[in-house]
Amino acid sequence: MTMTVRTAALLALCALIPGASAAAEKYPTKPVRIIVGFGPGSSSDTLARVLAQGLGASLGQQFIVEVRPGAGSNVAAASVVRSPKDGYTLFMATGSSTIRTAVSSNLTFDFAKDLAPIALVGNVPFVLAANPALGVNTVQELIALARSKPDSLTFGASAVGTTGYLSAQLFNRTAGVNLVIAPYPSTAQATTDLITGRISVMFASASNVLQLVEDGKLKALAVGQSTRSEMIPNVPTMLEAGLPGVDASIWIGLLAPAGTPAEIIEQLAAATNEFLKSSEAARQMRLQGMEPLGGTPGAFARRIADDTAKWAAITSAAGLEK
Figure (tube, helix red, strand yellow):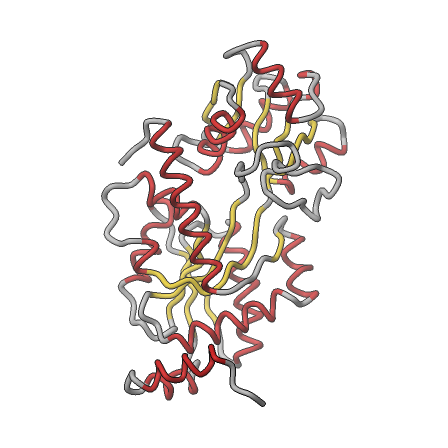
């Protein structure tokens, strides 16, 4: 079998690092910890436990999930950054980490530089949902109504500085409208007010609103991402609606401390991608309202860079600079 250029390059790199190849060949020889920055039952916690089972079965070692909530996952991220660069402490991050980078001036680490991407694991698709009484069936109809009635429509969102809030800002900026953004302490409260008509629209997890849409209590206008969701395939994307770049979905991905040997990163990436192709991964993730992603460390790094730049621009326009 011919050795690929990439593999040869990795082996050459490891040859320059004393003990690197040996460490990678033996890895893992003890339990691996996956640190989660949000509470038990959160999307990242749930997905980490699903992935831990798959990696454990594939790599023949136990993967243990540890929950360390606080400061929007910054506590967990900082602890992983300070951990040994040996592949035995990993971080299950969400897209909100790129927002924290954009809005926080007191971080003790650089998310893009101090953590090494392994693979995107899953995606939580969000839907732009409207109260049926609003009388709109498409995103373009919503935009037309918003322009005809300036400052009269309300966009429900989670707290200021969160993915939901900034996604609403992104929608306004991209569509050229000014829906009044109404922050809520919880998605459940915002959803209740959307059903009763106290607010006009909001981005909500597809799994949370799917039944409400089917019951006619809410109207799904678009999926807040560039590809259609398998959970709600008949709903067009923001790209199809004419608003490219409006992505309200939340990705979840696996990272390690920067400096972790390249062979270990590649090994973890390969095992993660292999598991995500399985029917068991798809089954468990769909039960939790998620969709498998996967991909290379390089693709994940580009996603982090793109999202960080996007949210930095939005936070600046919204007056939420560091």
